[in-house]
Image 1 (cartoon, rainbow, N blue to C red):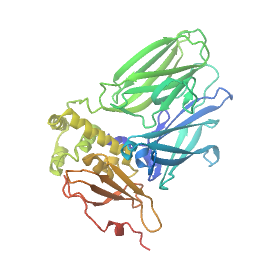
Image 2 (tube, rainbow, N blue to C red):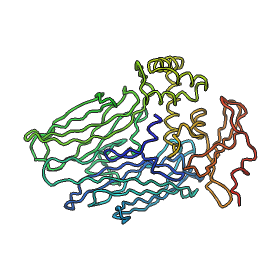
Image 3 (tube, one colour):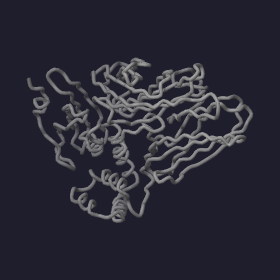
Length: 439
C-alpha cells in the first residue's frame, strides 16, 4: 500500500495529507460536517485526530509509563482570520514501552461555522521531548437546507455503541470512536459509519442502501433496510463485516430514498482495508498493483531479482508474485505485510513513503523495537532516536541510531551494533560527533 502514503486526498471529508504535514510528529486527521440544529444556516464541523503513541517520549513512573502532548486546532478563513480555535493537553499511560507502540490516542473537537471553505490548521507537541508536528489542509464545508431530504457527511469509526456515559465522542445517544486513518484490517475488520438524516417526514417510509465497491467499481458488499422515522432528524449508524475482503482501496456508498416522493440523497467516502490473509491472484497486475507488489518484496529478495521483476510483463509479474508467496506460510506473509503497513503509517514523510525510510526498512526487516529512546534537537545536536532490540539475530542487545537532518522528519540511520544481518548496516561508533551541529 505504498501509494496510500503519497496521497493528499480530500473526498467526503478526509485527508491523510502527508504533503501538508510538517515536523517530526505524525498524525492522522479526518473530519465530517453535520447540520447545526440550534443555529439557522450553520454547520457543525467536527475534526478527528489520531496520535500514535509510538512516536511519543514516555517517562517511567511507579504506576507505569507516562507521556503527554498538547494540541491546537484552528479553522481559518482565506484571509487568515480564525473562526474557531481549541487548545488542550492530554496525558497517556502505558504498562510498558512495548504496549505504547501499539496504541493511538483519539481526539475530537467541533466548531459551529457559517463559511463554505476553511483552512484546517493542527499543531501537536510532545510535552516530554518538545518534538512537534503540524498539518494544514483546506476543508470544504457543506451547507444543509431546511427543506428536502438531506444527509450529513459520513464519519468512519472504529466502534459505535449506545452511550452509557457522557464524553466528547457521544452524539445522539451513541458513542462514536473515530478512525482518522480510515484504515481497517484483521485487527479491526468491522467498518463502522455514522451519519445523520435531515428533513424527514415522520411516519413516512424511507429506504436506506449501502454498498462497498472496489477501485474498479465492483460491489463487494451491499445491503438495504427500510426505516420509518419518528422525527424530522434521524441517525444512521451501522457496522459492516469486511472479513474475507482482499487488501485494497474501497469506497463506501450511501443512499437514502424517500418512498413517497422518490427523492434521493447520496454520499460516498473512501477507506482502505489491509488483509494479508486473502491472497488475490489476478491474471495480470496493473501499474499500481505492480508497484505495490514490488515494494512489498523489496526487503525479501535481492536487487537482481527486483531488476528481473521490472523486466516482466503484467501477466508474468502476477505469476511471479503468486509463486513467491506460495513458498511461505500465510503467517509469514501476514506478519511481513503487517510490518510493511505499520512502517508506512508510522514513518512516512512528504518526501519518502514509510517503507522506503531507514526507520521503515529496519521495522520491516527486524520488527518493532523493544524500547525507543528519543532526544529532541538541541542547540548543539540534531534530533535522534535509538531503537533497542534486546535479542536480535541471537546476538543479544542491538541498537539502531537514527538522526533527523531536517528532512521533514525522515530520520536517517547513522549507527547500528548489529554484527550480521540480511543487509550491511552502518557501524559508526563516532555517531554522536556526526549529529553535532557545527558552529
